[in-house]
Image 1 (spheres, rainbow, N blue to C red):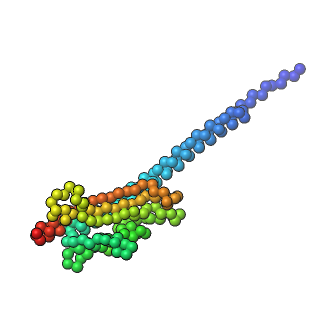
Image 2: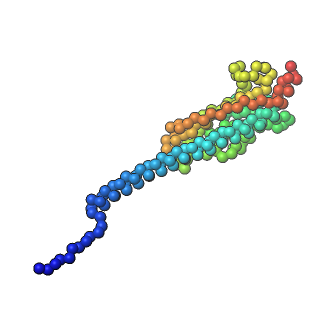
Length: 190
């Protein structure tokens, strides 16, 4: 009788290969899901911080103009809300709401304001803007101080880029600005 040498086979069985592929696929699917969610949240927070910076930049610019103002006219003119700040002489600064370009100062956009996503959906919309005297409930008790103070409110809606009808977050900006120039004028006139 002939002696048949035993063949040693090294490798994986079909069951081991299938089990490995199932485990690998499960882990890979979980990693892709975590990456996609992290990317969505990062993008949303990036947009939020960009809009917050824009809103604060607008209020800073407007606050500076209001501080040195000699008078302010505000209201709605046609379809636009406007604030006209008299700086004395023939110098005036006009702030206008434009839904496409954001808040305009003398007809020019105040910084970068991207309202549209490349897919055509709206990203940010201006939900409200107002400038006026502080309310009676303000912490200013002296009527002269109150008449030289302005309350500026600005509201932006951060929208979902896939569905522009979904508001992700409403961002509110508000400042009370005291105008020493106007206070001096009010104090001298009484």
